[in-house]
Length: 183
Length: 183
DNA sequence: TCCAAAATGGAGTGTATGCTCAAAATATCG
DNA sequence: CGATATTTTGAGCATACACTCCATTTTGGA
Image (cartoon, rainbow over the protein chains, first blue to last red):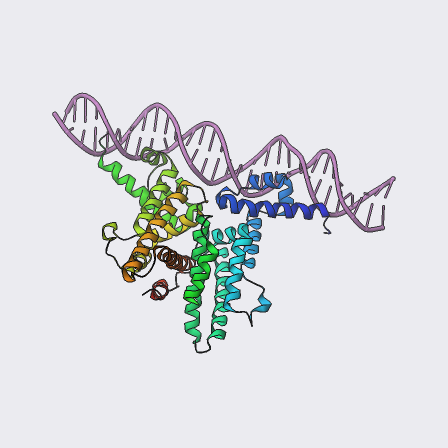
């Protein structure tokens, strides 16, 4: 089962191609053939590495969901500003991954396994926002902080979707204002 | 060219089936066969009414985009509360259409014709929000109102996406809290 | 250098999809 | 009712899709 270097490079090329395609043309246009063409690989090689198309899609989606949150080890002390800043830099600096993140979230039907994973991750993230809010204002109740966190995260997600429709939209500027209003 | 009643009923059945399918299983699962099965119609009838699958999809998407905004004739006097209330009742009372609206917005690639229509409509809607904000607070500059409107609309859209992932999410409650900051 | 394991190329398979067509059925109206 | 326009049927077509197979080539440790 010891893998060769060439196989590992091929796997990386396939994942890269899949991520780029998802960002460029969405789930609809991301076919196995398109992935293989972009990765400069034949179908046989694809299925030597991945057992199905769904596996790559899941891997890229997982990667995107992971990347949206800042380092979990900081969770106990991070400020709201840092959390918002992390989201902004996710969108600005890793836009392909951000596009995948948003498309996956929206295209998943309510009860798919991807939707559940997505939701679970969202709830964790909302918890980190709520914690940061309570550190800034200890008078805030747990329940109120939870609601405020959902509203702020909703605003950030919504503004990111807005950016998805229009590259020119100034996401960072609006996100910071949202953080001021809902912080 | 005068159409028969049966044909008109068939068209309505196809549109209804398409809307329901988009809400239930997303764009991916909405095939011509699935639409025909649900509408209890054969493929030939489908293509007697619509020239392609894309045409129904566009028609339903257009219907959803139209339905999200309240009556345009009120635009000159409506309040922010009324605009927010209209969005809430759109999501709560017309959830299939709301699901379609959100999925279409997210799944459209940046440069498709659907994305352009969607964006154009969003900009109009943001304009109505901004106008209502300036009526409530005449000191607000046009530029500031535009930014504030984008932030509020972003929050509402983001919260609607949250609801898309999880039926149990209390959209109305969170939406009203998001709007309070601008009361 | 040799060799077994791993990776690759690429033709090929089955299936689902969007769509067509001509004949048959049905609606509308004088 | 008869004539004409519209709609329906359902088999069937071409294509694109995800995926398989296996002979061939490449890899990397002994």
